[in-house]
Length: 63
Image (cartoon, rainbow, N blue to C red):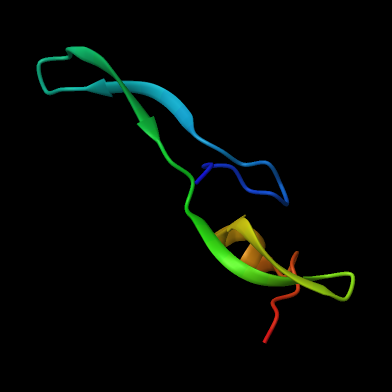
């Protein structure tokens, strides 16, 4: 599953993990992507959508 929202395009972000001794190592933060059934112009299909788009009502969920 692609870790990218099909509505807003939010995806994976990378950065540094910093320990107590200030060592830096690379890490990544994944977007909270859910596979949901949506109503896309009368057609019901599955889409990968982030939870921010679900909560804000940017997608119409199919019942």
